[in-house]
Amino acid sequence: MATVLFGRLGKALSPLILNLLKGVMAIAFIGLTLLLRADLAPELPFGAVGWLALSGAIGIGLGDTAYFTAVNQLGARRALLLESLAPPLAALLAWVGLQEAAGAIAGAAFF
Image (cartoon, rainbow, N blue to C red; front, side):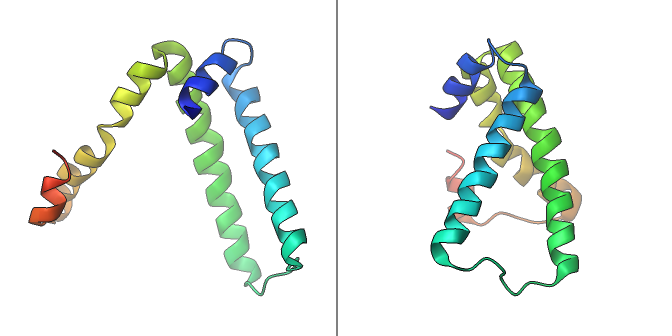
């Protein structure tokens, strides 16, 4: 449902603006959650928080903007169809590149 909603919103907003609005809303909800928990300063190493923020900025900032662009260009149904190929492709790459073998239960999950 989220992809369909983002596809509809993507007709009025650019992917970058859509991602920015989604990020602002997420930060607001995280801030509200921290306020309600009265846990404003969790005990985390500053360096770890910095790496996490950088990872989020790159992964969510670039990745979701590219995803919203794909949804705009392909449509929600085609984008979701391609997105459903991610787990089997990850397993295939792990098998080829890392010589990891999926067990029977994991293999059955692809079908």
